[in-house]
Length: 251
Image 1 (cartoon, rainbow, N blue to C red):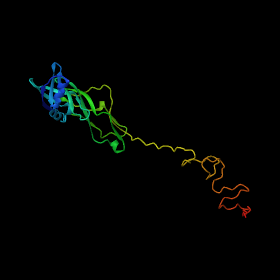
Image 2 (image 1 turned 30 degrees about the vertical axis):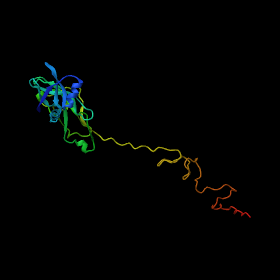
Image 3 (image 1 turned 180 degrees about the vertical axis):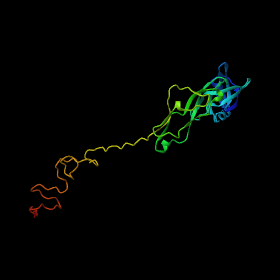
Image 4 (image 1 turned 120 degrees about the horizontal axis):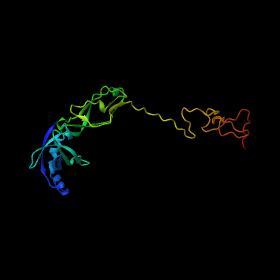
């Protein structure tokens, strides 16, 4: 478990005092714990960022050297950050007892490549971290989850994880950690019929004549080659029907 040293100076209480601290490149904080009188302090912003940039990240153990007092072993148990920059705006330090177990959130590290994914399956990571309880010096950096043997339809549950010695999981209900599922099939939309427009691949209506206009009644004659009514004058350029008298020219 990584351990760093961080210096802290005492500060006044109040919003204006906190704003003044931030303008000076410091982060307002409070230190508390069992059998420890709470004290308001300020820590250097850059030094704090470096402390949580280690492999242990937010679970790093901190030897907090408070101005005018002896060092205490602490951890960041809560904090506030700027919505846009994600930089610290306030930190809560919890004083630790090396002989007392604490509850921490430990990240999960998935190792290997699932065989089911190579066959086209989709990997679902249901959990990214796990709440565990252990002694301060036994906090793991991460918990390994081997996924190589997972096939499509397989999953790994919480009770199947191998936890480091001295670490116990606090979750009473068993749940899925990671699984491989079959890929979803795309549904092909059925053709939508529009009035007056024939649907490709649709069967013709009973009694319909091939080539008839869309929406025509059963038995209708196709538009091409329609015969003129008896006695009707042929259309311009049309050939007279067989046996019909030729049209008379007007004088």
